[in-house]
Image 1 (cartoon, rainbow, N blue to C red):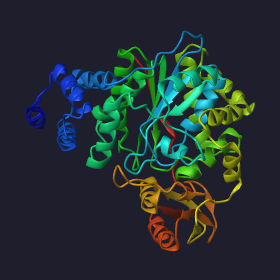
Image 2: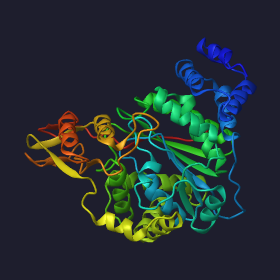
Image 3: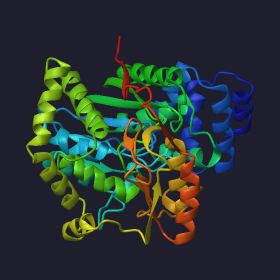
Image 4: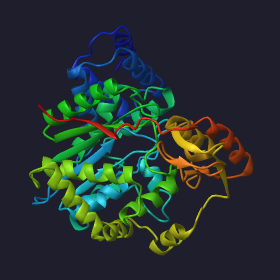
Length: 437
């Protein structure tokens, strides 16, 4: 096809016909449209947007670009959760085994990092032997037997999204509502889900900077998800501050295990339990959110999700003894330096964007789609707003590959924190729930 006129049409703000969208997605997936032209189209969409019909067509075309998972009939509903991405956002890791223990089947197809935000697959790649790329037959078999899987889409599943996903990261077109909507929901349609909970983040380190923009994205995805037959709900969550006390691939895996062991940070636990509770209500496994949350809390406390986590790891090839040995280490990075508080008081700012940029610069994120990642670097023991600190107490620990990187990170992180004489105003982690009308 001659793709240039379509790029020009969208550049001028014109509406693209659904059949033309389906055609260029099919041609791009087949390798007949070069990356540079698709990058130009993505930039045109970023500035001009897509209407509801165009977004629907793009989502379905991306889903139809490959295979769809087909599960046998089962009383256990198929459910999943997806986040728009943040710093320290590791909810998926403890949530998947928890949902499996609550009677769900969880075919969780995840992605890699975009911009400064961490990717679930990058975190899992830090586990010795763990395989994130599985054939469709293994995904289905594992979901049926274990109850959960966390993996990337196969070469034959939503291949259009995989190619476009990498281009968005490299072309500066990540924070686009129609592109985010199509990327997320095309993968979820391919999972044949019954229910989906979306964690849509807003704040300085989120793709949606304001709550109003996050609400627009959430409403668009909830409407389209339900229109496509998936019971979809969204929560709006704050991403001005990192989630948990650790950010960086392996450090987040460690904190996820702590959550499963009952010793994880309160904000991580809140999102894990709330996500599970919403899915219990959406699938009518529980009559109220309060009852569902208590059910999820009791399940997590039982220790069964921790055992399910190990079962999932083994099923996906992980070396469990090596994994547990790594868990016992204080750090797997070459060097650890601490950022100290300049005064006593209360943490009044902990800027997630600066922390995310620091981790990327340490080697824990990508500058281009081909960048290699150092799984061991990151920032841990992060002091959060409202916490009391003494002079020279730890604000953060930097895990780095060498002394030069660590020193540069210390300088950068100084601007991420503020310590005040009095506690600042505390904002709720979950600010709004967006459900189908």
